[in-house]
Amino acid sequence: MAQPQNPDFIFANYCACFIDLLGQKKALEGQNLLPSEAPGTDRDDFLKIVANSVAPIISLQRFAEIFRDRSSSTPPDLSSLSPENVALYRAMSSDFPKQQRWSDGLVFFHSLQATDSNCPMNAVYEMIALAGALCVNSLAVGTPIRGAMEISWGIELHDNELYGAVVANSYHLESTIAKYPRIVVGPITVSYLMAHEREPITDDKLLIHSKNLAKMCLSLLTKDKDDYYVVDYLGENFKSAILQQESQSLFIAGREFARSQHELHKSAKNKILEERYEWLLEYFENNSHHHI
Image (cartoon, rainbow, N blue to C red; front, side):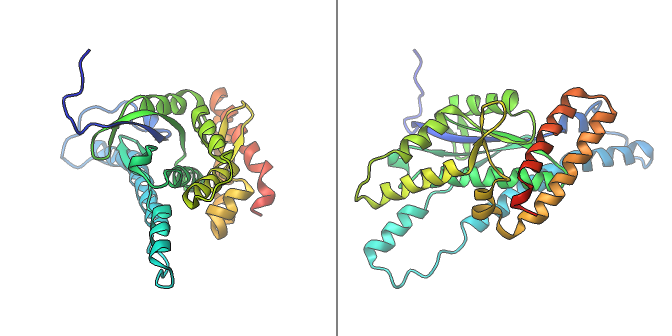
């Protein structure tokens, strides 16, 4: 059996979240060669298509960068802490998922190996927060996404280039299970969080931090109607921990977009998309009391 030749390759278990921008296939339908450089209708139509397909991708990437920058902003003043507690603070807050751009989507990932991270649960929490925030923000601006998180083995072939079962499994969940604008959380990820939440009480502060974060992560999930766990991006806990004062405006804009899409697909007699947006609207209505 062939073995990887690069001695620096390290196989590990990873958590990855695969994000896909919806509607890109339709936006690029019928496209092939560039139109003539001469001004005219063909050129103008092409520029409109470019705007409708490329602009949402750029917007998604920018929002992800803004959210990541905000989450990893300058830490508080640590001058009053002892050297030991400063080291502990940095160990508890140093982990953040990597980002890999993927055509019309994004992949966020982080190794779960203890040797690679002081507290990988930080990165799992950040992925849940980021994916949910991306989902509700994308609905509010009318460029819906869907996604999925899962844990499996992987390998970084190059910096920010993940390969392995974790990519295949998170992509499979996104492409076959997610369906409407939501973030599905795979069964291995849910089991991982539950196992850490059930860890026995200990004096180890890093383990306590990880246990508490696992509990927080689980509080940001819910079971959907099809029995899959999903990020509860309209839930009360997600509002309190992530959306905060922005929740009302995002909720109102997102619900209006969901309504418009439901009516659009109902009028077009597209039963599949009509049902998916009906499902989404039901989720909005069930959580309206948290935001309005």
